[in-house]
Image (cartoon, rainbow, N blue to C red; front, top):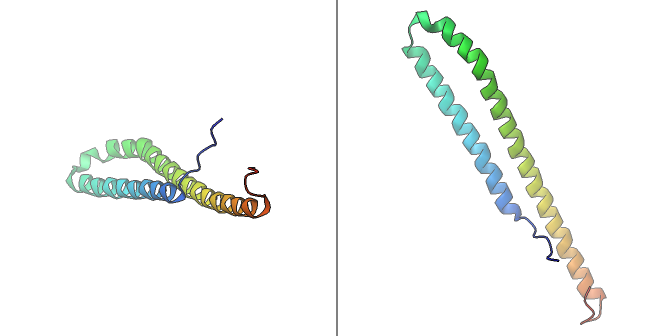
Length: 105
């Protein structure tokens, strides 16, 4: 049986940072688009747009909040992976000092 591979903590942190960055860019672009739409739309569209925003704007906010939550969880997993790697390295060092050469684990 092959030993499980350990995740690279730096890679996990980088992926989480990319997710957070993408979510922030998405929010910024959405807000810029909303500002542009408000400036360009005629007053008679306001009730229709308000219904659309109420229906889908909340869903977008929930999606973004979940996205940020997942990114935070990934950062936590990266930190846990880093701690696990440190503990494994310490265990390996102790094992090498305690066991006679050639006896294995």
